[in-house]
Length: 332
Image (cartoon, rainbow, N blue to C red; front, top):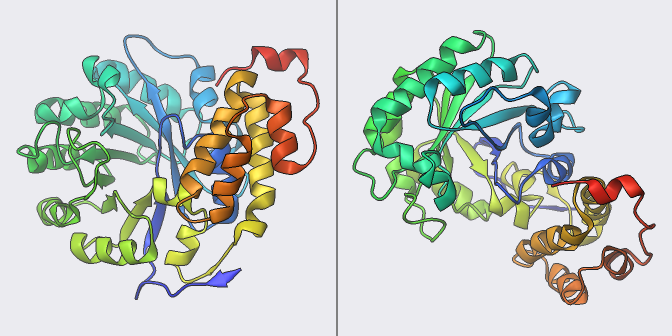
């Protein structure tokens, strides 16, 4: 392990939800590496019905283990939708499963989500945002934190402060702000200084998010936003030691990460259809190439195959056992 200098005061660090990327398998290995204090699950889509418990536990299986990852890191479960009543009913059911909190998604930029009145498109309607937060807050026990994640806006940031105030007035305990609009997607830069405007406008803790890839990025984000907490997403997927580095703790090199890569592969094998398993590993290695040349070499070795047993042999030196019959029916 190597040591990197930390920012002047180590901030509170959270692990972001990322649909299709940062799921329970990756949460498990990243929290084992360490440095984050809390995770948020990928969104659980709420439409017009009360979901059974198995839907919540499929997205956030940590609900079956006390709302924590195997490393002991608390996990908030995130809900996405546009109907205050239905969201409140589902939040009440979710609260029965003892999550570390209930988070509300006002930031997803996916067109299919936005077309169905979910995610960032709701930022065009601060009144609805308030109604959702207030309904969920009333529906869950006082001991269960209700939090929210938003972008600066939908197509522009003209209602940014209105939405942040709506979330605060609705009773949220914390607000994560991704410092770009939906229209900006994930294109750099992230406008960290706009988060400072939100911090000044609302009386609740604000967490900065977006485009933090390095310790230097973390320093600048904290300085420009004025926040004392960061949510890490793609930056920590690319560099699993990033949270530890921000804290000034020893960080793992490529060799030290090999057991976690193998653990991730085993978890994916147990949860994901065989035809999608190689893609999940390639996806992670593709991001890790930013930090580790060895990840690029590994990606090149497996790039041309989607056969899980071949991938296992190329990555870890031995083929995976043939999948059990039940695995053929596994879903992501």
